[in-house]
Length: 273
Image (cartoon, rainbow, N blue to C red; front, side, top):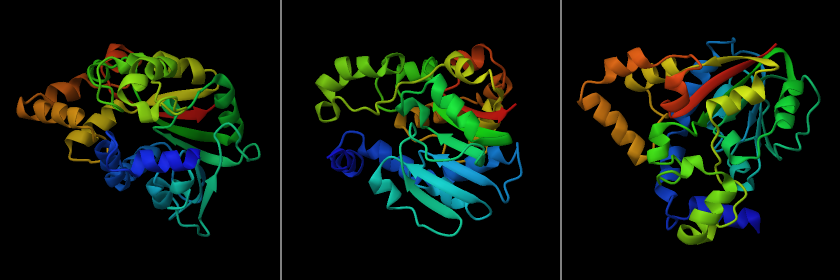
């Protein structure tokens, strides 16, 4: 029954979020190129064992499987069925909290817009650490809970202030009245702040932010990073008012005010110490 509900929710044109989700699907191949470009700044992507955890439509898995072996793990059956099985790409229906792998199995783990949809804990971070080979990396992208842009319009629902709420509060105060068909979903996005992320990962990983690179990539014409109407309008306003150079100067990869309170989405690579 849960699978049927998921299919109806994500692929039903009458759902209020259908247009937003469809834009994300349409840009998934461009997003895959961006993910690949960041990982290649940290490690050579050839002959690697890769776990794409929460692989979505599978575009990133398919792109990386050209030169690596990729396990494309998804909890949603309808998505797993879309991913073609091959010698270098293995679609797998599984839960992030019941990972069926041996320790030190992977060189790279990808978590692309996943952590906000699960109850992410220190235990899961430790499990991911154990799955990585020596010097292995985790690529993680997730919206910023405290970003002013996301507070004005939550990236998942386009509503103000929701980014500050936890999953239980969103169900209680928003879903119950405005999205009754989605009430009590277990995968409602509960965003993390930069401090939250650093607290979970900093004991066993070195941490590298790629804010500067992502801003440059976006304004150089790179697609796949923005798809909500509100965020697209923000980009157009910045361009039309000639604010691109100022924003590029402000963008940085430090654990400071800019990334804590303004950067809308974190793009981070963690390297196993």
